[in-house]
Amino acid sequence: WGSHYFCKMPLDQREVPFHQDATYWPFRPFKTVTVWLAVDEITEDAGPMCFLPGSHLHGKLAWKRRDENVILELEVEDYSKFRKPYPLLLDAGEFSLHTDLLVHGSKGNDSDSRRCGLTLRYVPPDVRLVDPRYSGWIRNSVICRGEDKSGYWPNQPRPTSSVIN
Image (tube, rainbow, N blue to C red; front, side):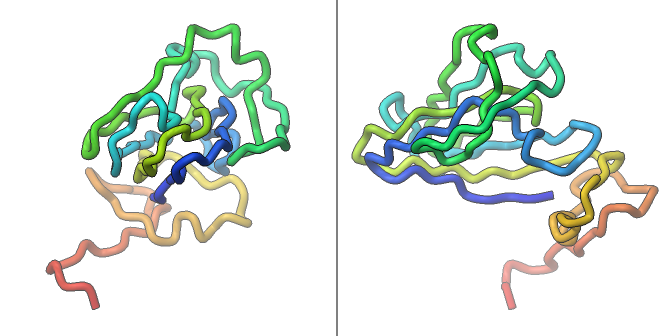
């Protein structure tokens, strides 16, 4: 249903608090899978995404708002009860997959290199938008596999050539 680049420029000290993507997104049920494709090499000092193993098994969690020097402002309450954060150190071209309920976040970029990833988000056709203010989010969807028998998700035609008009 969507994609975007997520970049931290060199020496950008803003962190991404530990959060669940589902907190931000108006979809139910919680079934979004995100592909996080490393555009750049992601090193320990570049502020890699870290996830909390097993946190996705606890459903949607309570959160609190953070205002200081952060990129996203919603943070899962008491995330320290989960296992130790696992950093995703990736070479350019490698990727990770995570569900919208996985708790993840990152520290600032202490390196002199950009840290950039492309996120690609997928849902099965039974997922629905629950807030009409975000109807534009599904306007350009593409059925990647199978079919949407309900016809809920618009299906943009696949390109027929590599030429972009």
